[in-house]
Amino acid sequence: MQHSTLVSLGARWLTRKCSVVLCEFATAADENPDVIGWAPEAGSVLIECKVTRADFLSDAAKPVRKDLRTGMGHRRYYLCPAEVIQVKDLPPKWGLLWATKHSITVQREARGNPDRNLLAEVRFLSAMLRRAQIRIGSRPLSEWLRGENRFEAKRGTPPNTRAAAAP
Image 1 (cartoon, rainbow, N blue to C red):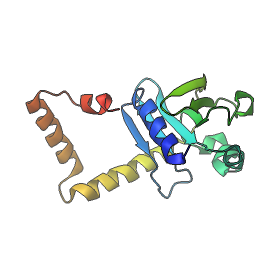
Image 2 (cartoon, rainbow, N blue to C red):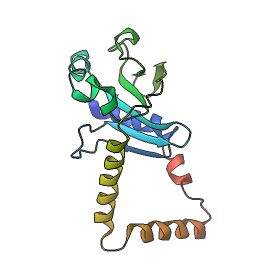
Image 3 (cartoon, rainbow, N blue to C red):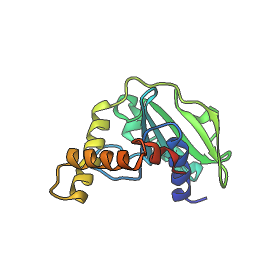
């Protein structure tokens, strides 16, 4: 299984839980999550995709893994092909997701990590909003978003239902 396949599966799984999901964006941050999402009732959820056991073991050497307070994600998961990572291998509070061709099974739910680096999450989101601003041009992002909501209202589609319905 390829890393890109895991990322796609992880994003689809997280979309069912979160209203905003972003994947594989590089920023100047100390951590560039494979998949991260935000849910009103759960806070931020991070998924790190690991294709091999060696990749998982090398991940532990990252500074954001050594000090949990520097990493993103209130809840954190590893996603891998079935049996590459075992529950006993996980850092404290991390969850484990196993992927097959078309589905994900939860091996262990992530437990909350309130000491996450919230500033890193804000910087990451800010970088994503800057990219959106660049794509829409000189029009203010808030104006563009209001315009999108008006367009959806005219069509009779409540905001965010299109994103939630996407696979």
